[in-house]
Image (cartoon, rainbow, N blue to C red; front, top):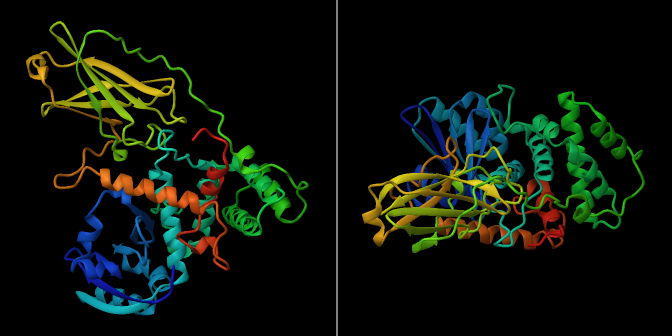
Length: 431
């Protein structure tokens, strides 16, 4: 993140919430909240910190984050470090009753590290892994351990109140202990480029320090400490393509086989809205959802297929297709995993046969209980945003194959590749 002077506006809402806006957002609109509300949520990185929520646009340079401060007292511990002394003073003034303060500040080192941490959480939720689009999945353990390291690196942003879900270094280390050994092997592999070796060692040392602070123990963490002290095993020849290769493949499920027959009256591609199901269930390609409508005498049947993510569970995920016919509905079709597909079929409602002789059918995939609903009225369906995100991750994967900028710490650079991205470019997968 390049240093420079940045205009910042601090405002106080009627409910006492303090909003901090910076840089380009001030030039686009007068009210910063409109910028944050605009666009699909999968184009924004969000971070819960002490007394506030921070947000950055994923597409383009993040700059200083937008902040919505609901507890100015708790937030003051990091506002100065993130935004500088003038902004901290403006937040204090607004908390005391002033409505609007404008100042100029400079981008801090913590701002770059915080933006990277926010982007990492975004990648864990929104990375558009797709066999069909040629975008490899990120190894969740690698990303999780680097997020643990970054959380520890950005500890100024958090306190001990326990209401910050993104202050989770210890939980991430516990969840991904199994990846510590392979990560050490990658660090000790020969040859490893010097910059990558430094990145690996830095992540491992931060994980070790975070685990020590949290009082964690166990064989994997003892192995980590001995390796960092130079008492670990000899150098390895294993690279990420061996250490983190996925061997899952596609498994058979007891889903209902689609039965051919009947007259095809319509077929098409559905909407693959990433917001409506958790990551790791459906291939993120735009045309991953397809459907066929058939006439079987007086009956009308809809058959739906969705490309499965290779890591999707065989059972236990009650995924459904939501079908609208000529604006009616929704009609939900349960989907089951079979090989590389989610499949399902259902007769349409008895009162619809006459309406589907020339039907207008809309199909989407969702997980009940997780689904926030279709995009809000007035908001685009997200197609352009999804294409922009795919372009972004392709650029990042290409960048992960190149040497980093000299002298830039990956922990403080929003654009530096994550270890999971570097490993993804080396995995021997059929992408």
